[in-house]
Image (cartoon, rainbow, N blue to C red; front, side, top):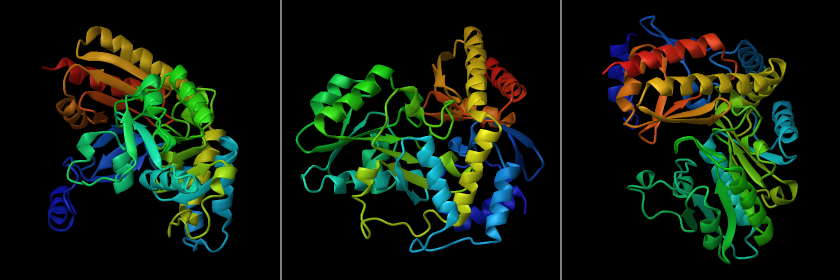
Amino acid sequence: MNTQEIKEVYDKYVIPNYIRNPILLEKGSGVDVWDAEGKRYLDLFSGWAVSLLGHCHPHVVEAIQRQAAKLQHAPNIYYTEPQGLLAKHISEKSFGGQCFFCNSGAEANEAAIKLARIHNSHTGKYKIITFADSFHGRTIATVTATAQPKYHKGFAPLVEGFSYVPFNDLEALKKSVDDKTCAIMLEPIQGEGGINIATKDFLQGVRKLCNEKGLLLILDEVQCGMGRTGKYFAYQHYGIEPDIMSLAKALGGGVAIGAMVAGKEIAKSLVPGSHASTFGGNPLACAAAIAVFETIEKENLLNNAKEMGSYSVEQLKSLQKTQGIIREVRGIGLMIGIELTVNGADLIKKCIQAGLFLNCTHDKVIRFMPPLNVKKQHIDEGLNILKTVLSKP
């Protein structure tokens, strides 16, 4: 079927809750994707950072194919090797916690919220503080945790027990804590909010505050985790550890999977019957995620993320000098934001038309998040397209 035919199918049968570009994607390989008409696009956005290894990485494809022929689903009342081994990978690469598996970042954050509350149920504490411009998901609880009013519209009444303070404002946070607060939840790097980076003093201060007040520190690494910043997890840049961490997006290299990781003493509170996920930790998704960890190690992709991230920022700052429309370039590793002086929606449309996938968030921030195995030639190609688009009136 061609693009128009599929569009007609969508118009008739699919709820139009997404604004879609008029492109029918057909296949992908590495940083490249092709539409039904055979046009190639350079993907330097990776689908909200999901395609961590690019499209259809051979090792991930092989792992999925092998597991699909062996066992695709098993209820969580039985053991499976892929789930156990994936939990081991996550725990050993992070802070030695235990894992609960689900299917998305919203579900992982929902699990974190439930764990924080049940862990404190004997104390009567239930409130969670989050931060302006955060994004934690689309369920009714996680959309409440998301401190952006535009995502709340039409869903009142929201879930009780959430309050918001400015990001990177430790004094405002301290004033917001009361005798019912049980946790503080934040993204070390806010993705949807515009690639806003927590300062070291701030995040270390949050950890200290949690220790002093007996609060749980929940870090949402759904977008910034899995090596995107040049370390497996963004918190590892700050010399602190969370009590609870959420993962998703890149974890499965393109396959839907989420995970909530918690320190062992805290994890004990999630007793049988308190939380579950039918498809969470299924063998197919876990096999894909294991392959992602193996590929990161085998191909030395954490180091590549650092090198290509530094190169990208250097080139973007050079471009900034000739393009007044660029206000600021910021990021860590391959999680980079290009803040504009104008709304970026039309610019992104022009990039797509020119064969480059990027994204604009928070109206004026272009997200530049290539796969971890990106090469200089891909970055140069993408930035040449971006430069051309920026140079046109």
